[in-house]
Image (cartoon, rainbow, N blue to C red; front, top):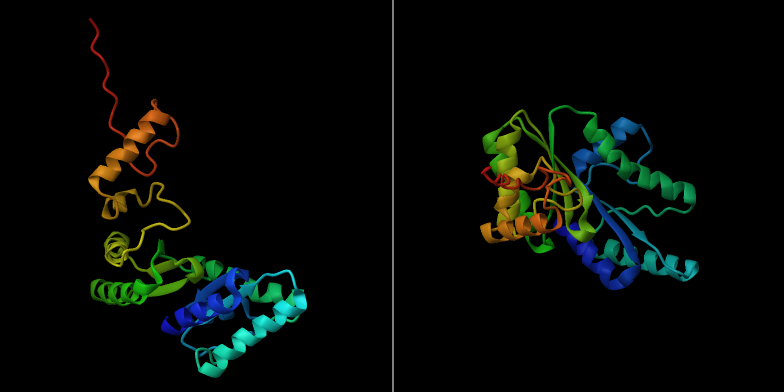
Length: 238
């Protein structure tokens, strides 16, 4: 993770806003995707982390040169050990297909609990260390799989376990201790509302309920999502 964050910081500095994607794939997910799809890997397995990086710009020749130079600098400094750059639209789609197959690989297994979380880069490693150790203590047979959008601090933290509630308590509590949020791109909905108070104070929860009541006084818009509303007081008949 430290190397992935160093790579991200270097590319942000070198490429600026033209850096359009930065995805990380942990080794066991990368190996699982290769096994599932049977495709020829763009870079060999056996590394500690994999990053899929995309740049979008307006000057094709100049952007290609900037991109190559930025990656070469990271290679020469030892941040990365291998690089594959798409040379055609077909290769571009083939590389992205590997990332998109990560979800397919996860869904091919049973008993997987998924946590879509966001964290500051500065505390991401602390979260991973704490959550992994606590999960191993609670369920020695648990298997952790991680991939996600490191560029915006979003990780898909997935655990194969038979103890969903206990593992959810551990993982999401570790997120809050690391100054993160228990939901990044998929919302709270029904599944996470039990854990929303971990990261929201009673005053914040009450404020959200007041806003909900103001915009939806009859509680007919997605009732029960995010949090429960108090039951309406039915006036007594005379």
